[in-house]
Amino acid sequence: MINRSPLLTFFALAYGFSWLLWTPYVLSEGGIGLLPFHWNELGGLLPGAYLGPLGAAFLVTWQVSGRAGIHRWLKRLTHWRVPVRWYAFTLIVVPASLLAATLLLPGAVADLTMPSMTPFLLYLPMLVIQMFTTGLAEEPGWRDFALPRMQRRLGPLPGTLLLGLLWSGWHLPLFLTGWAIGRDLLTLVQFTVVGILLSIVMTWVFNRTHESMPLSALVHISNNNALSVLWPAFFPTLPGPMILAASIVAYGVLSVILLVATRGRLGYPVERDTEVCTPVQVG
Image (tube, rainbow, N blue to C red; front, side, top):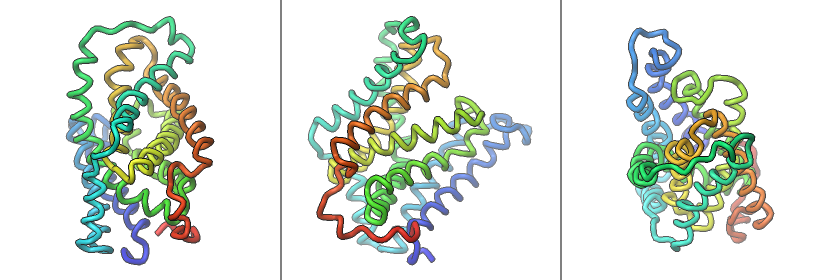
């Protein structure tokens, strides 16, 4: 089954491993409260985050492609040598876009505050922590394993949209815990939209940097770091859920620009068009 449908197996294992390992956290007092203990949020999240997409990608790659496949997977995983402009985009343009987009929301201009030096001093250390707790946990699976295969099978834009939907859906049990900004349907829908739009930006970076997983991961963690460190410092009294609205505006604008500029190809090489298969199944 793995050899016939590696992508389908990957998503089944990624969801299954993560959701199983998140169950104690979801059932604890930090979640729906069925179990009489409090589970530390970081301790509740990390095992599922790592053994889900990362573990699934390793197992499926080993089974389908052996050592050669693992070598290609690791090569993308360690592809840091890209032009400096891509680091500037991921580390400067992404957080700046989020802050600028927030100013378009009601009440944001009146709430804008010049923060102390503390968030700026914390930004780089927190970025490193985010890389180990989020980037290296998720992106070897979503972008390093799944994205190349989904682009070959479905094409760059359809593959990206489906990956964004599945990536967002993977977080679903966490909406029953304190991890979530809110537990209502609107928050879930907004989060899913953000995941799809952010995936468009990440696919473009991945393709244009010759499949550099670290740079794609930097987009992910720059987003998280900006929203957890900078955003509350610049907008101290805005309601938390407005983070999602700001993200939709920022990544919506970036996505439209990228789709128009690349004619929907998102930097996917023209010579790979012959590799695209008929989208009969995600496998």
